[in-house]
Image (cartoon, rainbow, N blue to C red):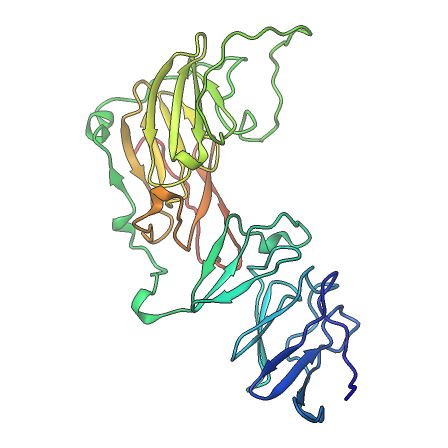
Length: 337
């Protein structure tokens, strides 16, 4: 028995799935293909089912791996991951997640596993780390709306800080108080730098670090995967304090006057006293509280984001996926209160 088989996948082996006595294949390699899926009788090769996509075309070609299948769906990756329901003949596109090159994705244990990937051909579907995805369930529904009254969490130094005005921060040419130096993200400074440089000091923090910021005689840097922010003396490298947040600190802190502000992947913007690292405000939660119990083991909740504090008064959210977080917004924050 010899029957035609359309090209499928991309830079990978061809797809062929057997489900409920039918052999399925689809013309999915590139946008010039029809996207039609054909189901043939496993014994005779006769066509029993055939349907065109109701969501087509997507990217110029299939992602660089084979499709996968379960008893209910064929999982293509024309853009992200498309659930092709061959019973209802419907394509459900999920543009916000995709598989790794060559390997793709793996449906198993009632979950969909999406490994990390380095491809930037579709950055909107760029999810970092290893992701395990589950279907929506009423028993674990994550709330979308967060009441304003629940956003502000006062730290132990909050009341004392309100009785004092924030210390002034003189303008110094050699300060670098925020990401890329200033609110314009210029990445430039008027400070003169000699052609020959010598090492002044070195301090071992460990792990992956954010870009450092420097102001008021302090160097402040985040240890991304250790959930910590560290302050060091800018002249000697002596450690001054360390603060542990609720999750990864993916973006550089900002130093404003006598305060250090930074965002964390737990959805909070933190405000610390620069002198000793005591938290003034665990300020303004921008997402529902969905931190898993084992976040210290590097496992994150589903609705996470990176937060950049834009010198001086606003917050810039670097969302893990615009497809997932369209409802989030970032109102300006007053760093004093």
